[in-house]
Image (cartoon, rainbow, N blue to C red):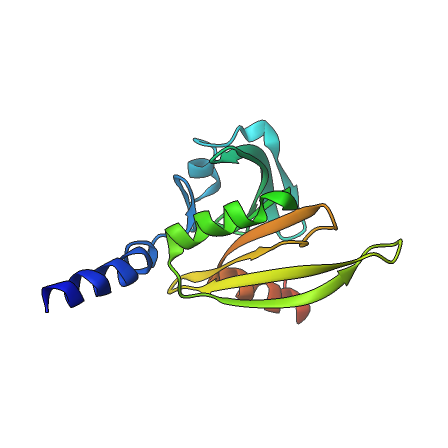
Length: 167
């Protein structure tokens, strides 16, 4: 019985610990623009049609990533988007699995570059209590992958934009 409890704890623990924590490092969803500026230089931020966004650079383990923080029209963070060279895909997928747990869905598809070369893409998604996290091997282009951390309020913002309300 004790072994069963330990095994169940090891399997469930990562997803339980991070189920309520949606963000990147110390930057959490729902932060205001002023709170975000404690971590990201305000000179890297600018308004856009949906609110504002900030850009930054970071490292996950030894992997360089470009980071984009998007805030809604109330200046509240609801999207964190990262791009990386796709040869680091497996390492970053492992880091996400360590943080968010093994309960994720993956799909594969063939992508093609302009020269006609074909590559096997992989897209994995964690559906969490407060939002969705995904990693896409060829998310940006044939050289760059993407990670997105989306609060559920982000989807409401996009739906509202598509309906032509407020944007």
